[in-house]
Amino acid sequence: MRYWNSSRPFGGVPQQGDGSVKALRQRGLRCIAAVLVVALASATTALADDGGGDISVGRQIGHAAEISFDVLILRPLGAAATAGGFGCFLIAAPLLAPTQEVPYAWDTFVIGPYQYTAERPLGDF
Image 1 (tube, helix red, strand yellow):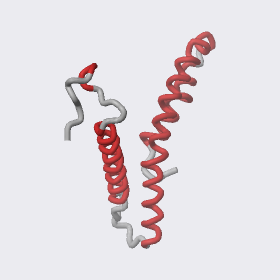
Image 2 (tube, rainbow, N blue to C red):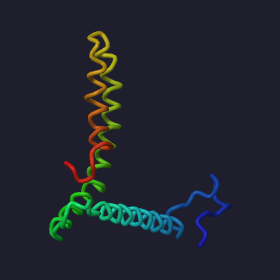
Image 3 (cartoon, one colour):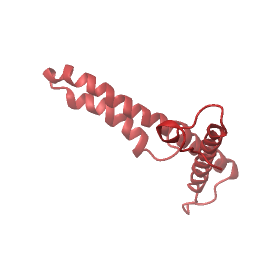
Image 4 (cartoon, rainbow, N blue to C red):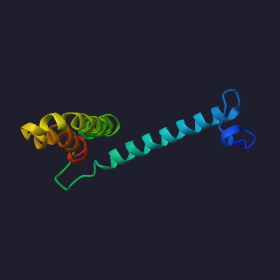
């Protein structure tokens, strides 16, 4: 299966109407599905018992659901909030410079979302 045709302008960019766009779309969906499978598998391996005793099956399933929700939904949203907070900090920093509150703005706009996204344990809301 050939994705790129060298006879096209701009180095073979796929055009609507030929099979290559459909093939690229299917390939992208397969990649997304593979990432989701790996994320769910890694979330369930985080359920390893720490030696503290037996954990009921219902608790394990509930914890796996919490971890999956955290990995698939909350972490990407937290990364977006960190990036958006950095943008807000860039806007607010010149306005706060005369009051010397820039470190407080940095902590509020960037460090808070970063800690929620990267430093928080999986499944801990």
